[in-house]
Length: 279
Ligand code: PAF
Image (cartoon, rainbow, N blue to C red; front, side):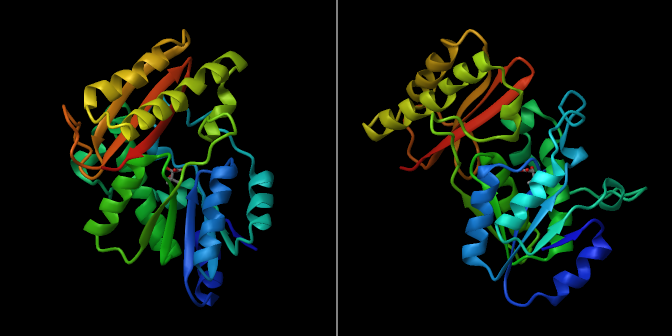
């Protein structure tokens, strides 16, 4: 495994690789969710590259950039164990050279839901992912369905900019009790973690109701809210039922594939989760 700490160090081993390259972009503190992306990439590509870069531009002033968890030795051991060929860990001043003014924005898709709660977040994501695509030049890139809006936004960016990268969404990986894996789960106290199970429980209830023929947007949202509002430590940011492509909020009877997503705060920790509801 080659670990490149600068873009220059990355270029030669990248150029030496033949066949297809799959990229798993990450911000480190790798968990089973990232491992599942690496395994999928390994199964589908000749070689796998992982980027580890805590991207400052996708964090707002009140976000957790400074305390975002980091564990480089463990991350590299995981990459090695998953058969990753190349790891890219560029410094911030190389990704954002002094005086850089170019940003990438997909517009309206990036200002609803997560984008409304975290202004500028998705512009930071699309800017850094386009830079990572330019450096790594993968044929495929793998992202978790857990960050559902991120996936929609990155697919749109890739399509709009005609980038020769196939963007692949992979299923959310969960703890055995249902909690979606996230690097931020380490911030939860035992009480918060126990109450956070209401997120996946609420989504599962709505999914079951959907399967039973309940296709009314308000009724489905209410099911999820009731489950979460029963938790004293939970503060709902949003529970959304939106069109999977446009992310426009659904009203009344749902006729198109929908995305049921939510963001909930437990103290200073903000958790997101979602399920897809196909018509
Ligand atoms: O999902 C993440 O970890 C980040 O948003 C990403 C895609 C690596 C961009 O910084």
